[in-house]
Amino acid sequence: MNALCTIPLMLFWHDVRHAWRYPADMLGGAVFFVMMITLVPLGLGGGLGAGLGDAQELLRLIAPTMLWIAVMLACLPQMDRLFHREATSGILEQMRISPAPMPLLMLAKIAAAWVVVVVPLVVVAPLLGVMLGLAVGQMVASTGLFALGGLGFVLVGAMAAALTLGAQGRGIFNAIIILPLAMPLLIFGASAMDALIAGGAVQGHIMLLTALVLVLLVLAPLVSAIAIGFAEE
Amino acid sequence: MFDYLANPTRFRAITAVILPLALAITVLALTFGIYLAFFASPPDYQQGDSVRIMYIHVPAAWMAMLAYLAMATSAVFYLVWRHPLADIGARAMAVPGAGFALITLITGAFWGKPIWGAWWVWDARLTSMLILLFLYLGYMALADGFARSERGSKAASLLLLVGVINLPIIKFSVDWWNTLHQGSSVLRLDGARIDPTMLKPLLVMAVAMLGWFICISILRMHTALTERRIHAILAREGDEY
Image (cartoon, each protein chain N blue to C red):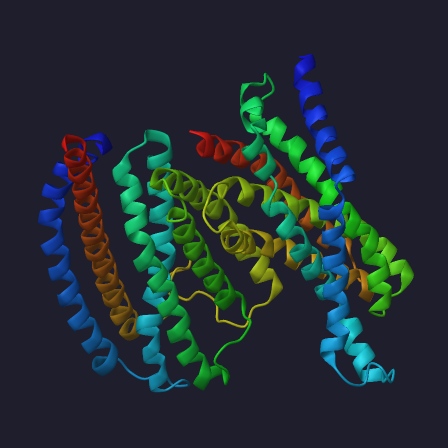
């Protein structure tokens, strides 16, 4: 019983500590996020520099969408490598022979990935939102949405990473597998944030997003565990 | 029963009977269906002759969804009972299934241009068909993405099952997001809401496409079985020398 709790906790702690000691990956995601959002106003072109009303308004309108897409894309390349170190260093065999069930270990890996991948993005997001013209209060309020939606992206990413472990040219697969699965999260997340900004009823959107993340929370550890099993046979 | 069918030799023997039968039905239904669709059915009172695109567009959309469900069923048989033939079946159905999704999208574009005034609109049903095409592509990429084909089969089968769980969620989220496309007018609880003169060619074309799908799938399965046998023979000869 004790091993059931301690082994996943140790795995979680190990992953978080590893990310802390080698912060390049963690910071890389946040930098990628900042770069993507910076490029949007530049890509929109003239008018913004002069502070013209129309261009500012356009930017403010597409801000929630841009932020959600950027969060999703910043998660992808990091989730791609989720099991890479385990597969090459023999940790996967240790996970297999450990008394803790594989889905629980997967959940620990996913929780660690959430801390390492999503939390930095959630911290940076309000700053970028304000730069896109959203109010400070709105951005602080939507931090929770990003944290929740980010968990969904990590869950989907973990499934894809486990399915494609050991495949040739994983990056392309991951994108094509993740896109259909992550799309509902994007729809619900971005519309929840739209409602929040418009001052409409947010509760329904948040409940739908939460329901979706809960479904994934049940599905993803199981599917990842089974897929990891295939990789080692 | 499935154990009985899962024997490749027996499968070949049975499908050798089914194949010409399905081919005959396809040819007959396609000839009759095209005649009905292009000559013996009336133009729509609003859409004119462009409504005839429907007789290809709608059955192709049905087939795209049906093929995915058939593949997912095969995936269950493969993952639970480990029948290699189920995996060969799923792989065989993927290409025609993706083809049907593509045909739906292309004919939809040709239909949308005169009726909605645009080749593509970000409507719920169009988008979910596009996502379905992505699901097909993801399956095919994953199935062929590994050095050991068995590993690809298992991962891709698992992806199919995840996809089936996700299909209603995708459908719901996209419906909720935006709808411009007309609602379903054939598969309704209160009976079909389409004129019989249009329903008949539609159903005949659906039979033709189903027959064609069965033919192609069986042919592709035969090819895959032959390929495996060649590999097995080559491997055995390699051992001897």
